[in-house]
Length: 355
Image 1: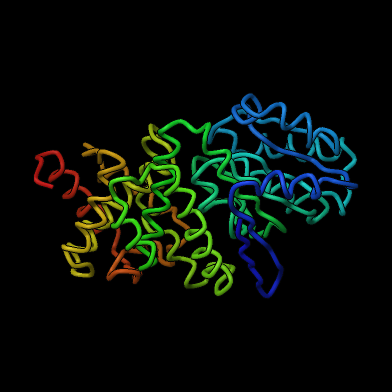
Image 2: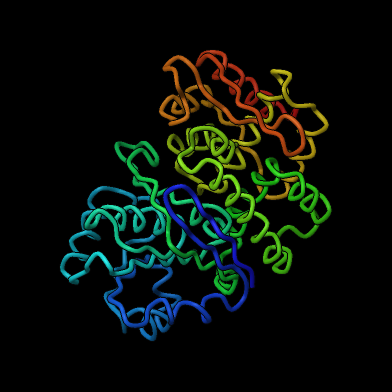
């Protein structure tokens, strides 16, 4: 078991990761205080005894429908009303027990209720353990735009226990690998570890080991840039195009779309002379081990959803974080027509089996 400390100018947070982290820490975090636990229907169904034995004894358990569709205003309002009905005070603690959707919306509710109550994240998916539970981003979607309403609100504690991974479907593991490969494109040591273990990316022991590495990398970035004014933008690698396709197609999960977005953006990086083809190919080979990249027929239209991305600073430009060298991403800004035409070019070459 390892602990990562995140101390910024505004707060202190800790991430406890490793086997046994849940059983060793959660009972003490619940003891002698009023709590409010948010989870989703899938997690509650699988782990109901855990909720009955621990969380329900110190407060209310609020279950939301599983899936991205729950990241909306009405579900958020339902959580806030339930917090009020439960008698939560400013010294109470909200527990977010679930994947990225639960972490995002429960974290947002905790940041809003009484202008902020204590928050503990308990990520139960690989993706949320290596990425979304760490760093204090909270959000809901609005008008079909992903994560457009939210706050930066650091959890006091994150408990990342790999025991939850044993009940994940294979697809959920692949989703988490999307964020892990993304982190490998940002961190030389993680990149090398992925290359050395590319035959066993879904192996349980490998995943348990690399979870800590990804958390440590993200923590270092958050410490240096909590509010995403510079360095933290690198964590969005693959997300600009991935989110655009996710909004348009809605057929895959977030982690899968991150991998798809990375693939298309690697093509852009090579096409624009930023990334060497050999390095791009090494990342693409990892991506292809996890997912088949679709040749979207209307990719040029779909990618225009990237205009809503929060990193864009000019209406006529798309901002991308792309791999340049091992462990060194760069920001690339492209006029919207050029961005869309290169995406369409990539999709056409995929369709013709030229990539």
